[in-house]
Structures are given as structure tokens and as C-alpha cells.
Length: 317
Length: 317
Image (cartoon, rainbow over all chains, first blue to last red; front, side):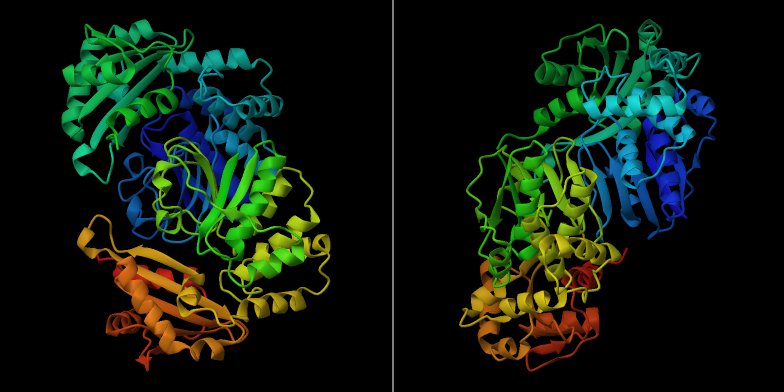
């Protein structure tokens, strides 16, 4: 039974891609089971309920040498702690290729599209398999989630085509209304503790040139995508305290938390200290005032935040 | 014009996959051109002549930042010298994933099949493209070459199916006879200098744990696949001298040259010194006598030689 899982602090794509890929592999003759590497965010349970699908279980400890399949990530910093001891036999992902290596030839399927689920739909078609309504519902939801309903600059024509193809199978007549309901569920943060809010969509990135160890820095980059940014920004002081704890706990050089207004397509980033403020000024030309920096329309961590930080931290040859 | 190229010391699959992938990308709307990273072996010109296709040109120097596509390799030690300065946007490969990283999401297609061309055939089918007779001839030849006409343990059912599918399109009625002619061309080594023979199918591998730099070793592993092993082994003294020069020139910890009898499926490996002899004893249980070790049916460097050396050199946790 091949374990399939997405990244830590799972978002909707990470959870759903594990579910859909495990089912696809099983239909193709490789028994597989989906797992998650952390608590669900507020959007994913809504999607699972609408699709009538159970949430995957938390990944148990896996002994060294276990064969595993990764979806929606490939960097060890975003995966299970003992990833380098496991045998990665399959990856489906839409992120840049990080420090992953394999001991044997493996099946790797990376495509620069907006969502892992878009690749999974292609895998169904290539295998000549029909898409089940529940899988269609899940994949469509992941694509709307990852692309913020096509607002993100990571969106490609293939993501749009996939949603068009999947909507009738999923029985979703009004995609716009469904996306808004999904985003509302995601934004209904209630009295979630600040530490949980910070960690909900949070990834740790190494920056710099590994060949020059003194240039290496590790940053934690959180994102809260919401239709109700006022609520999140109203909790700025608590969130800054949570960021400070995260920095100490994870031994980071810097922590940023971007509050992304989904509907206005705008990024207000919480800035922990002068260290982060300096980097934001140099990498984005953004000034920090009262613990916040206006990053304008940069709503994609993957496409607009991480590449600029990479350039900033890579020593110039 | 996207440059597409295979590994240094190109074998038939490296050259042909570059040609076929460049043509496929161009048909799909991405203008691409194939290149090679070194001189052709004795088999590839035979294949190109039979298919009526020109050899690709040597790759010119590429300025930093140039977008490139890799086929049939991914490790920097087997690629163009300034690979880390280039922008890898596409890879099609059937080897283990090495030290490759990408700055942006890319299209990566790795499958554990016997030949890159087998994956390229799948890409044609997925795109709904017919296979041109010349491309069919090239892909079939690469598969026969890489799998030693299905003798290699790297062979998968998909490689066999691909050849069955391609043979009628290529107009090759007797695949067995064609494979033998290909292998005969490859074995007709004439008065090729020993240094050239050694380097014809030669790859450099880092072994050990990068996190423990003192455990790292770099080995050069050459293979001569031939239907006439007596001729090659008759030049043992010259070849050992060439191996000694290679070790000094490339700053290697060890050099091995496996003479693979294609038809008998047997590997006789030339052993440079006591260092290599010790490793062969410990990793394969093979004794060296008179500069040679009998590695029996281990005819695949990728599947039978490299993994055993990796295990041997990786420090036990």
C-alpha cells in the first residue's frame, strides 16, 4: 500500500492531490493510500464535505526504506521529517525542483501549471480513465483554491480548461458561486489561535548558494488568503508575537506573513523586525510602516515572493 | 530556439532523444534544436544513416540564463559545464534524479523505463501526434540500443511495446536482424585509440553522503558494449593506461571499464589498481585477476553497477 502525501501545513491542493492520486494509482493497479502531514485549513473540510469524501488520515511514522509518492511538493524542508530515508518512487508536482534526489529511476511528473490537480486530470486522460464525479469535484476545488479562481499569476490556460472540463462532471453549474463559498469557508477563521493562523499555509525555504554555506539563510513564509483581510489584520499584534515564536522555534533568519485579499488581489505583509523590513525594501522596494508592508498585487508566494527572495539572497557571481 | 541535448560522451539514446524531442517540441509550437555534447560512438552514425537523419551539431557555448531542455540525463557531472548557470525548463529522462534543481517550476518527465525514447513515444501519443517514419526509426533504434535488444535488466514491458508499435512505422520488418547490424556497427572499433574507447560511453558519478563531505568519492565508469569482446580485451594494457590517464586528468578516486558482451550478456571489468579491486570485492564479491574482474550478468551500469557502488560508499547511519 503506497503512501501518498502532500506538504506539511497542507492546503487544499496538497490534501486533494493525495486523495485523487492515490485513487488513480489504485485504479491503475498500484494499491495506494492518501495521507496528510498536518491539520486541515478551513477551506479543505468544506471541499471534502461538498464532494462527499473523507479526509485522509495523518501520516504515521514510516520506517526507513518505505516507498512513497509525493504530491504538490518535493523539497525536504516541506515534507515528512525522515524523507531522505524513504524511497521516493513517484512525484506529481507543479513547484520548482528543490533538493529531491532518488536512489533509483522514479516516475516524476512536474509541470509549470497552477495546480497539481491539473496534472492529475492529464494523468487520467492519458490513462484513458473516466473521471469519477467525486474526483472531479475535488480536482476542480483544488484548482480554484490554488489559482484563487484564476486570479493568481500562476494560472495557465490548462487550469482554466481543466475547470471547464471538470465542472459538468462534478455537477457544479455555477463555478463562480462555488469558488466564493469555498473562499468564505476559508476566511471564517473564528477564534483560531494566532499560532495556528500563521502555520496554516506556511512553508520554510532555504535561500542562498549551497556551495557558499555562509550565504545560506532559512526563512518562514506564511500566507493567509482571505476574503476578509480586515479580520486578520485586526489581529496583527498577536500574529507578530506568533511569528516571533516561530522564528525562535524553527531557528529562522526571518519570518513574513502575507495577508492576501483574494477578491481585491492585494498583499499586505506583516513584518516582524528591521531584518525583514530591510529585505523587503531591497527585494521588493516596499517600505514597512507600523509592522506592515504593502506588496501590492504580488499575491503568489511561488511566483512573486520566493523568486525575488532567491535573487536577493543568491550571491552575485 | 530552445537547445535540447543529452549527456556528454553521448550514446545513441542521448543523441536520438535530443533529435526527436526537439522535433516534437517544434511540432507542438516551441521552436527547439538538438545538439550533442561530444563525439558520436560507432553505433549512432549507423542509426542516423539508416534513418536518413543528419547528426546534430556540437552544442556551442551558451550564455548564463539561456533556457535549455535536457534529455537522457539530469546530473550536472554528465552535462554541459555551466549547467547551473542555465535555466532548465524541460527534462525527459529515465535515470535517477541527481543534483538537478530548477529556479522556476519546469516540465519534468522521468519514468523508470529502459530508454528515454520510450517516454518520447508516450509524449507523441499524449499530444495526439502521428509518429513520422524517421522519428519511429530513431526511437526504435534508441530503445534497442539502450536495452541491448531487451537483454538489459532495465527493460520494461513498455520498451517492448514501443518497439512493436514503432517497427511497422519505421518499415523495419526484421527487428532482430536490425539490432544485430546496429550492434555490429557499434563493435567495429577499428584502430580507435584507447582513450577514445574508454570515453565513448563513460560517466562520472559522485558517491557518498553530501552531508558528510569526507565520505564523498568521484568515480569514472566506462562501458564498452560489444559483440566482439575478444577484440576489446585484447587491448587491455592500452586501456588500463588510458584509465590511469583519465584518473589523473579528472581527479578521480577510481576508474572502472566494463566490457559487456552483448550477445552472451556478460560483463568483464578492467580494474586499474588495488583501490578498485578492493571496492569490487566488497561491493560485488568479485575477485580481480590479471587486471580483470568477472562481474557475471551485471550488464547494466545504471541498474546493477551504480546502485551497488552507492550502497558501498554511503556511510551507514
